[in-house]
Length: 478
Image (cartoon, rainbow, N blue to C red; front, side, top):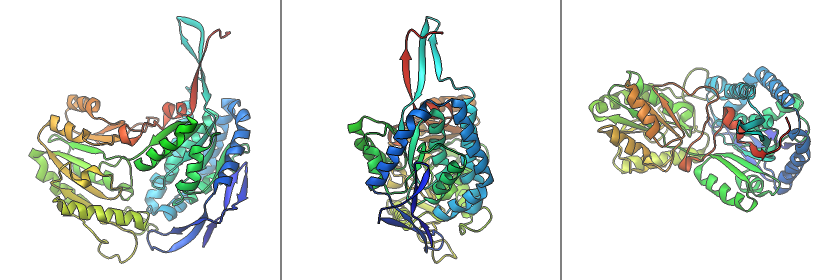
């Protein structure tokens, strides 16, 4: 049995003094494979104190030195990327090919993107020609608390740790206790890269104790959190008394608008996007809105695409869908599928229970509902599993109305051959991101939403500025 009992604090591995722990369960076999110690208040305080001591020197360090550190982290990570893929697959159930090509690789992509952004980043900026002796200083905000989820562990960790390092912040990372192995490996990599003691600190723990202490701690200047909308609301309340900055990347209920002039692969592509990572994606296009003239054809295509998705163990090579992370997630998804059936949606693929050939594991059938009304529970709630809802619309106006009729606003999608229509919809859809015709967002584009999806912007220049304060200076000597 694997045992994680040390935290990385002040440049060294510190044995946990806590008696609390969490049992790690293999999502494929439902068998325990390890335990992780959960930090208490004292250990969080020790990590924050180490970050506070390290802050003055790191905040005033030459940006070139910070860039050099991240480059070393990148190179060491690249040499251990297969190891990273395997621990991600083990801890959260991603099939090994997905863990290798998307999950672990995301850490490298984000590092490269932030290093590119730093090439053009000005920490001292002129206000304008009207004020030749005014400057705008971009300065690190201070000690930051980073709370990350289990569904894309290295993607989300890299989106926080790397820009915080480059900005000159010191930090305490608290990953999800459900997926602690990858962050533990990253701590080893950062240590090997030669990060100064106290700049990066890692405590494993749960949200109720370690997370809450980070949020309320008076010496933490900022919390960056990725997770559920409910937890995000709790963090905002907890941070209020200390007036710290809170950056939230929360849930989603993305709409995928498919018009009659969409390309032939649009529906199947939407199904695949919905079900990647077993549907455990905040930006998944879980509501497929289809123009009525092609609606039944789209339903047939979605059924065929879902039925073509293979389901298999996390450790098996090849392209297939793995389990969801836990019994709790599995049970929630099953309840929502049952709710969809009870509320009158037409089940066209999948359904409740394990897929054929499985008698254990947290495997969910790739499930598609048609004839969904936007007031149904499955259209309103974030399911966080491989469940797609198909909704018909009459015209562009109705499509926008349905898409925007949600408390979330992370990513919406548009499939149409009409460029003018796509541009109109990009402006009208209420979300932080819009992806069209299968084209992914470019490297360095900001990731984040509006409304109950939070207001953070992670990635590229925006991700760097998230960890900085803006200081206005007059009388600057040039």
